[in-house]
Length: 226
Length: 248
Image 1 (cartoon, rainbow over the protein chains, first blue to last red):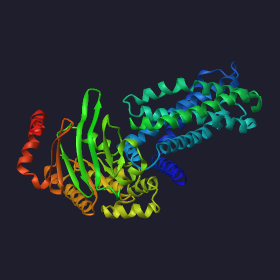
Image 2 (image 1 turned 135 degrees about the horizontal axis):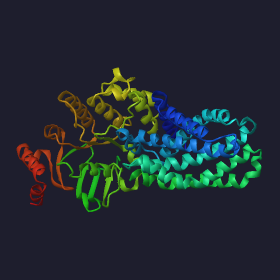
Image 3 (image 1 turned 120 degrees about the horizontal axis):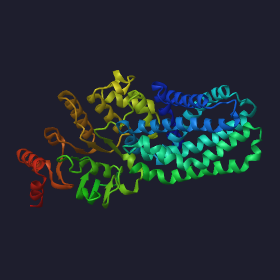
Image 4 (image 1 turned 180 degrees about the vertical axis):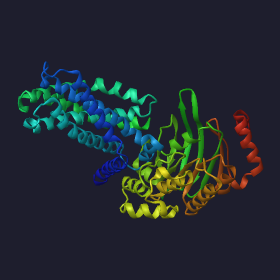
């Protein structure tokens, strides 16, 4: 078990060192998410539309689109110089590769989200601080589901010539249950509804998180081999 | 591994991609400490053979045991016993050699990752450049670092897939010296190459793979270099011709 965790830790450490040196992933995701929010800000008249009604959808569109850039980059790093082949030759269970990449994707996406949330609060003039704890919980559930499925599909699409196109085509339809859940929960939080009153949405999102992680554990071996 | 006389036992190994037979019924044994060089024209299936034997891809049929393990089982213990060097380096371009090798040492579960990484970096003569980004390295240096990655965990068996590709004469000689040293330490080596002189100079057994099959497999003592060279060049010119020689 120690070796298993150490191998996962090694993959996360390697991704962090690479990001520290290149600064490609976080900056690209942050700028993209910021641009999405700015485009919506300029295209919506907030004096007519309630910010708390359109805001959650825009926030999650920004997170998911920016996150897709991160996912594409994540496995590209492993494809360059056939590093994935090097990883597959180490005496490790292949799920260590999945969990290592999942956790580093999750951390990078969470960092980007933490920078975007205050800007979203300023641009939409919404007081997020009043609901910060529950909101972070919703962001956690949504980000985990996105990364769980996204890591699996980015490993699958990394072998394709049209990977930049294929990843969103495969990813977004399967993410619909999670997106519906987190957008509804974020909207209700902004209207002042307590998180405990949204158990069915929490249940839905958490269930899909678990399902996607389970499916990934079962299939990652075959996906990486082929 | 220690209880097995043979480091590799390959029987009727086949791998097809649709109608294309990349490996088509290969049989051979390789004893511990032996060095087999596999020659063959492009597209003969040499890389696919190495991919199967190293557990990177599954054969369509047949069997292969490496270090006593069935390659189809994907046993991590088998991966402890093998090292693979291919024309792709499997190194992270934005990391330094030390960071790359420390990463792979941790993935191999080695007790002292940094010490082990420094040791092999020194062994391949890259100590001076251990903190430079791999992206800045020449092809020859990359190939030496690739050897360091492959021998980091002290494997008993090495697979080398065209390791001389893209190297200049000096880098090629340096690599040859490294490979000789590895062979001297009783490592079992299977190498594919197009470089006749390097390939024949170092090996104990030589094979010629054409259209997925071993058209020729012989101990090096029984091989006339001129004849083999002629056969190899014929194979490159006309795969079908060498299949007929193999059939005889």
